[in-house]
Length: 398
Ligand code: APR
Ligand code: PHB
Image: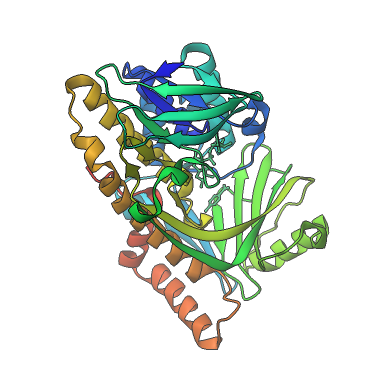
């Protein structure tokens, strides 16, 4: 099997890249280690920046997003029993965000690719990328238990591999240790997330800072609520029966105003550690990384999926330019351009995380600083506008 661009990973990054390349006339193949059912059931985030929605529309992959996605004009911050609305269109000159689950994006992209797209192989696990610095890199992979070799071949003799294989993939392992560096920070807390079959308790995302820990109210409209609680690292789900989760959410969302958290049957539950990770550079020879394969952000800023989409938008432009006139200008600039945005998103996610979570090792002074930061955002239009600009998404660095 031969192709121009070999894509490892069929998450949102790999699938959207394949769709964009296919529409630009660039030949590619996607290898996904899991089954279709597995990738379509995995619960992930769901907050889309305007640029992400625009990219899905431009890829003609937004039919369901446009009818089922919920456009949001802002978020609510809660602390000291008060609620504060941040109005994004007013603060950013008209920008909004949209709630549409990543799982649904994956379902939409898989369906499109299986009907009218390039090959997408499920249960095809990449084992290694070989020869990333040669003119003909090879992805060794196992398909439904067999071993085959996929050579990736560009029509003008160039060949490329893109690692979109998430945080536990193999593509980053093909970078020699001397040619790369990983920057990593582990936060001293995790998120316990639930999906509950109950309509959301209000129209907005609520980010709540509480002395007992952070809580987030989100949704999967029309029938589901998505809720998160800060918990200590190492927390086991057995310690958190449903009633305890609801009671804790109630406590952390408490406000003086009249507001009730709706409870319902919990249909999914998981614990995710919080970390930041950036792999530099994002290119080695003919191997490029995109999405979680190159960077992880804590979910407080809702940036993971959006960063993955902006990486592949840049990559698709770069391959289209190469296909059109043989220029590697954008491919050569890819890593530096992406990393500018990645570090800004990492900074924003880190700021939100530190401001909103109870700090296990923090003292009373640290807590006062958190409250002072929150007060500044709710008191100053300038400070609120800075948060809104980052949350709704910084422009692509082009
Ligand atoms: N071979 C083939 N596929 C692989 C391999 C491998 N060796 N290793 C991992 N994969 C697949 C995974 O099964 C998964 O489907 O790669 C895919 C990676 O997808 P995601 O983890 O969803 O990562 P990405 O596409 O970069 O999506 C952006 O940002 O914050 C997050 O939740 C957000 O998952 C989202 C991510
Ligand atoms: C979600 O809807 O899952 C979600 C929303 C906002 C976040 C994180 C997760 O910051």
